[in-house]
Length: 203
Image (cartoon, one colour):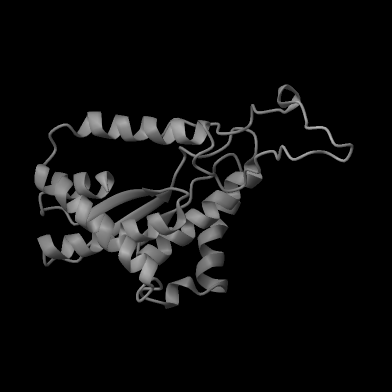
């Protein structure tokens, strides 16, 4: 909500091109871009142009395959949300895979042949309306307190991931169900170091 609201406030209705990072919350990201398009239509009659790029903030330092899966779902969200241009960041996997991913989604999966795949879905429509309502409040409040609000939201996300209250695509958290001989595994012997590794977002 903040991202959309502050982007619209910063543009002041004069700049119709926006760049949004797309994260791993699949339906939320679809709804976010749809909400941005709907709110822009309330502000200006100019057509909106949305550039989307896959996020670097939720990528693993150690698992390129998981990063590729995350980029795939993020790219799907961006396309379904209605972006005009898509940039897939090569997050520790080969650059040619990042370049090929949009082509596969467009030319083989035909994602570019449907104008609004989420239209008519009750869940996506309700989520879009909810985000649009909150983003409009942010837009009306202007840019005051923007930096502090963004920093607080990011800290809350990182804390949720660290506490495993927020899941990441490609991360299989260990199960602590009893093993075959009836004993629970020792948590001290489970490697947690690769879980919830965050890469600082690029400017």
